[in-house]
Amino acid sequence: MSITYNKYNYEGKVVIVTGCARGIGRAIARAFGENGATVVAVDLNLAGAQETIAPFEGSTAMECNIADEESCKKLIADVIDKYGKLDVLMNNAGIFTQAPVTDMPASDWHKLFAVNLDSRFFLTKYAMPHLIKTHGNIVQTASVNGIGGDYMSYAYNATKHAVVGMVRSLCIDYGPLGVRINAVAPAMTATDMNRSVWSVPE
Image (cartoon, rainbow, N blue to C red):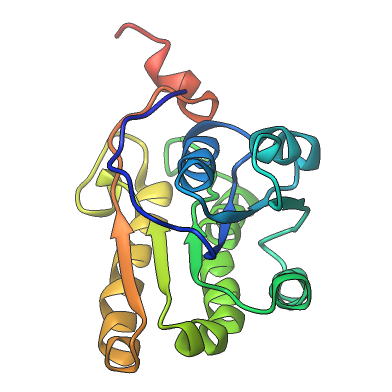
């Protein structure tokens, strides 16, 4: 995947990007790296994360189960131990599942919320004190599905609507403290996660 983007100076900035072993996250991490940032590439697929940031000296890959609070707490602590600060938290990682509501197991519902929403709470919770110090930024990957509806995507949409609501409220709480918080809402993107949808002509 390749993207075009404006050039910004991120020299000296420490940036966490989750879910960057492939897809949108990989493109985001590399864009930060190409703009001079020190990137912490976070994914359960550590080899993929390492491949993502391989061209960028000083950047590193870290493995983290973002659905687990203690893992998220340790990740933030490890980043601060290694780099001494944090400037940007890019909460990108997510999963997608479709099924009629009558067929979806509760375990799939809970996993969607754990990965797509709980992780953002955990990482934001432990990153926020450090971002207040640097007047840093949080960016959450939401979705157009977080501002509308889609076929058989009620569970995924619920998580993305929640991300949008979370961002709107966090802005009120932490904007006055100098932390800028935004969500981005991609539409259908040809990544492996969406292959079951975009690869079917109908």
